[in-house]
Structure formats: structure tokens, C-alpha cells
Image 1 (spheres, rainbow, N blue to C red):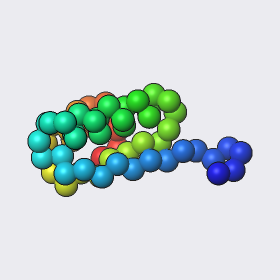
Image 2: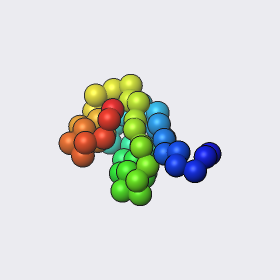
Image 3: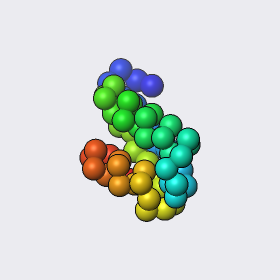
Length: 60
């Protein structure tokens, strides 16, 4: 990584349920964004995780 390069992270998840894995992805993405990272998510289902991330302004 060079001097001013942004940290970019993409999380990939099923996202069909709101259970342990989805809660972890939500927590990671939101914490990373608060830390200034360009964190995003690729989800295979339009579920609770999708809705929560979108309402927080996370690119999904």
C-alpha cells in the first residue's frame, strides 16, 4: 500500500437470515466505515442485513 491509498474492503455474505454471521458482517462493515475505510458488501439475498446496511448508507 502506498502513502495515501485508501483501504477498501468488500464483504461477501448470503444475507438471507439475521443471525450470527450477518450480525458479524454488519458490525465489521459499520466499524470499518467509522474508521475511514471504504467498506462495502455483496449480498446474495435482500434480507435484514441488506436493509440495515442500506439504511446506514453502506454501498450494497
